[in-house]
Image (cartoon, rainbow, N blue to C red; front, side, top):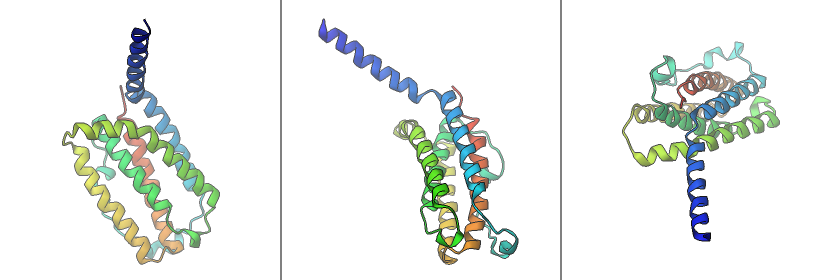
Length: 186
């Protein structure tokens, strides 16, 4: 009797965690809300766009980020996870020259971390299947794009104008991430 009851509980637990991971509609809602918070926080940071115009640069943003494409929900998860990781890493660099609020950055990093945690179980499941998808090629282009952003900040010694340029790029990233959340449907 105990064994049967235990087996039922284990099966129920396994199925419920899988169902939670697969609830793309809930994930879409959570990610969308969190991305709006991130955009709001990023906009609260002071910037100096007028006198930093000469600092602009082409970071070779992937075409997928410039024009909305048709993504499968699995591809959207992979791309979103990759972007969030890189944005998180960028925001943990030296931004002391910007006059940005540590509190706002901490809240932004918390939101990003929460988004990555929600996506991670699904991302791992997709990666285990190892289906070559459009998301894979987009992820490679994203790595190059974020590498360019990091190199730019380093070359400009993380100065205020460089951060302003990167801030504008990150706002574009959040807009693209919001469009990707639309692909997260059950």
